[in-house]
Length: 402
Image 1: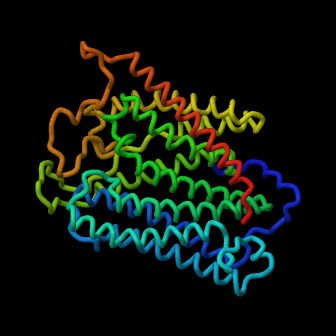
Image 2 (image 1 turned 120 degrees about the horizontal axis):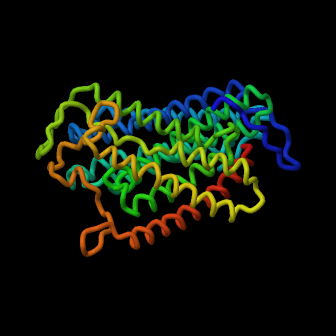
Image 3 (image 1 turned 90 degrees about the vertical axis):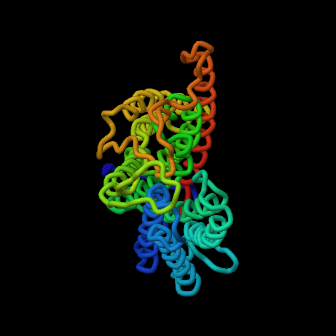
């Protein structure tokens, strides 16, 4: 993760701009947005655990405040950067910006500002929704979708700000520092996407059904491939996948240290501490494959490369998650480290908790290999399309200078 790849060639006719991070006025907003993005990610993981453990008692909970505080700090930092660039920025700083409504600022700053407004707008919507309809049955309720879009925009905006600085950098030390920051921002984005698809590609109970691989392949291939193509570390996709796993693991181990009890009936599963998230998917494995294939495949035929990437990602997910899912459902994983078999307070216990869900079976109750193969083939096709989009997106990001 600390080894930096060779600097990408600059497009013809592009001026050799010095990195924006050399300007004091542009350095601290970038750091502020990255830290705020991390706070938002921690807040959403904490918030989901709060809903599973305590219940939604009020809008003014600590995780809600952390999420909104992160959004406000990120938005205000980018707002300051836009005003500074517009009215007091140097010619070089203005040349590294995008014009919008007469104001000038980095592309990532505009995305972050928009995400901040979306997040703040979602707060009263979410409060009204709970007052009108009670608890959410699923994570992705309408107000939560709005909130998630805003969160992803803030995180994506911070990542784009680092990306532009990384692409402009020429000094080897600065390239390494910015490339690591970009991998960190990419990891935050992976966490956000993983949270959004966790109902379909999160629990070990879902790891023997084709839908798991269709959702996971489609959701993560585009990110890993895009990060792998645009990052300037030697293994950028692997690094971002490691950041994702590290954040989830830290959240799992920290939350279990805090005692808590449910405050909202009905309580079917007694809880004594904060319910942690599921053990993270082992994305470093397909991430490493993506990095190796991108380094060897070059840019000669992206369609053929996308086909190989899609097949590799699904195959490796199948190998590692199919068998790791079996372990997570076993008594051996029911401990502090793996945190398996921990359920929200409103879940009624039963044997179904230790079984696979939605596994294709024949009339005799055995695994239906034909249906499974058909579903996995569909997963490969979805992932190939996702990888192709990732190649296009990553190629575009590698040319972002503003």
